[in-house]
Image (cartoon, rainbow, N blue to C red; front, side, top):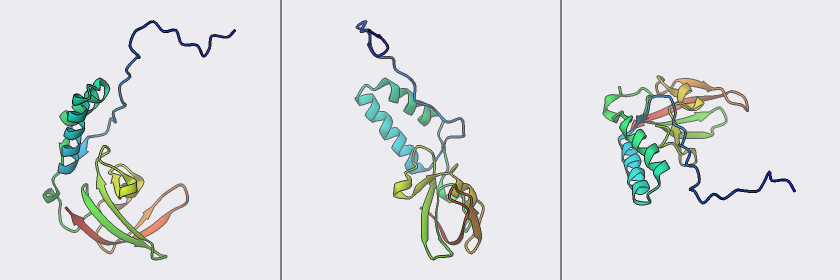
Length: 146
């Protein structure tokens, strides 16, 4: 019989691998830092060593970017951007840090293709986003910092 799928149980704990950490700067919004601290507290209360290591590092390396530090009318980290394409389809995204990103809720990482394309543009600018389905052009309608 093959032993390829048989686990030898030596009674020891399962190995605990570290969560991967991005090598990019750890930019966070003030809300993002709050969420990281809450996740760290939750991991500590659950005694989840793997997550404690991850969130401890993320909190320690966080670079908080406050909304008031940006020039008005320019898309930068922390901006909520509203735009439309030629068909009239609307886009509304908030540019945040990696740990705060949740594309299904409209928050995207500052390193995403859409965020990179929008960066440093103004209301009225046309921006082309290169994507696997082909490029799409958006016109920026509004920029807000919350």
